[in-house]
Length: 116
Image (cartoon, rainbow, N blue to C red; front, side):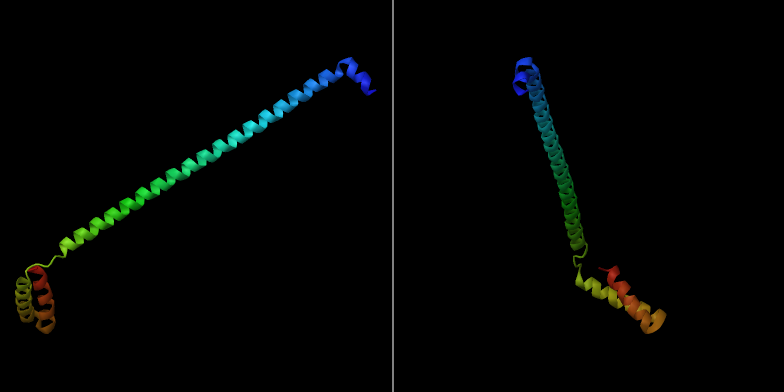
């Protein structure tokens, strides 16, 4: 039975179909692997983009914080200490005249800040 099949041409037809099926399976497997590699590359690029965006956000936040600290230091620079003392004395006297000891305390704080 097997030798008869070799002589009738069915063997060549079956061998050809087998070869075509093999080629199709190999081509499909290669295409699937290629698509998977492309998907992974896209995911990596998206992750890299998100990393870069986060890094820029952090850098901007740090820069803004640094500028805030610098501005705060400039704003907190001590003025003339004698002017602050004089303002505290004048404010305290005016506050005492208006509101007694609590007014003196409040007036001294206001006068100190006013002459800073």
